[in-house]
Amino acid sequence: MKKRNLIIIIALVVLVDQLLKIYIKTTFPINTSKHVAGNWFQLYFVENPGMAYGWKFGGNWGKLALTVFRMLAVVFGTWYLGNIIKQKYHRGFIICAGLVYAGALGNLIDSCFYGMIFDKGMIFDPQINEYVGYNGLAHFSKHGYATFLHGNVVDMLYFPVLKGHFPSWFPIWGGEDFEFFRPIFNIADAAISTGIISIMVFQKRFFKDRNKQTDVHTVETDSRVDDATQVS
Figure 1 (cartoon, rainbow, N blue to C red):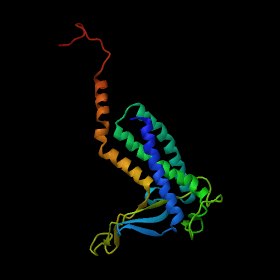
Figure 2 (cartoon, helix red, strand yellow; figure 1 turned 120 degrees about the horizontal axis):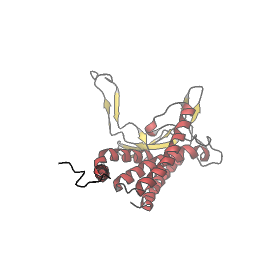
Figure 3 (cartoon, rainbow, N blue to C red; figure 1 turned 135 degrees about the vertical axis):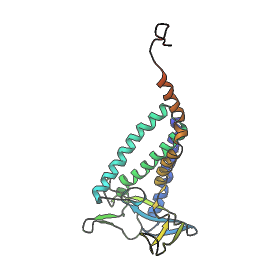
Figure 4 (tube, one colour; figure 1 turned 180 degrees about the horizontal axis):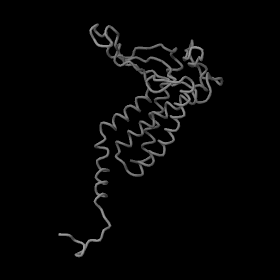
């Protein structure tokens, strides 16, 4: 696969991801939603100071650690993608790795810069050890709500396909509400998940040719074979 083609795929994923995030950030009040297709698909604006699908830990220090980890992952990913293209890995594997890279890059942009370019965003309150929201719409501004590396990731894709209640006799969650699919995520998260799941599902196909090459190399030998060394 040509490097140019992979760059185009990555650029398109990041572009769509960022355009949708900016649209949501500047037109939706935080924690509000709009139905797109019935009740099963909504655009629901939340800000995520942590990992994909709303997972978080460690307050400001945890967020900083996650942002630095994303940055290192993107740096490593840049080298890794170039390496697997050079070694002519399976096209499907390269595309999947590119999707993971694009997703990490998309969320890294939020974490690094959104706190600096938007005037409003969730801010960590050490007194309650939690992030707090804000009122009104966010706008582009020279005076951001946070410093470099402390921006929040914008999430908006929400698919509450199925809602209901566990029966009272159900173990552990008896009588409680359930919802599928509960997490709110973004295009970058979807790209990461699609890439990883596809690699897991199609790994035999992706690495079949490389496994054959390994088998061929395994049986090769530099030993001299002649009448004196043959063993009947």
